Length: 199
Image (cartoon, rainbow, N blue to C red; front, top):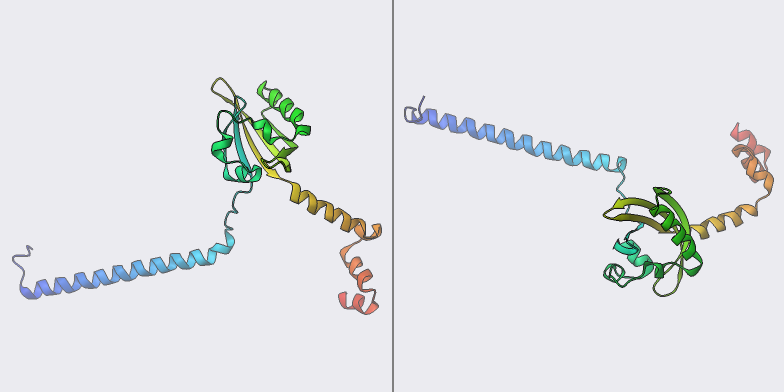
């Protein structure tokens, strides 16, 4: 039926029906949004947020730095522009005692001895302080040679924590390190009453 042929009452009824349907759809949309927000809030603890990247990344090609990320720049105290400039020598970021190791691994990797390698070495920041680094090298065929992706992190802090834990545990009597957990509790509290409460 054409809208021209409809009576005024039929048009008003149709308009009311359309308004009701629009109200229903708006309510449905509002409920769907609310359900999605509730789901997001409830599921957030189940899906941990990614931690910010703590690894420095550098790309070396033709013995020059092609790229460094902000973590690498901060760790070594150089800006990305400075480090990636044509006159910058990447070996200036390696402590003298580690340069032979780095050179050897770089040359072997470029010759195809391995595709990836993990090494620990001592880095040297721009201000001259040393940085103990744990590094993962990935050798990638690129252009006319081999590019090296270096992912590294400073292990100075973790080494200090490990050393503190070793010192702490070395002070414990050796027999405690191999005891069952409930036996440790009995020895720690040294009480028959506590032993009876446990069982």
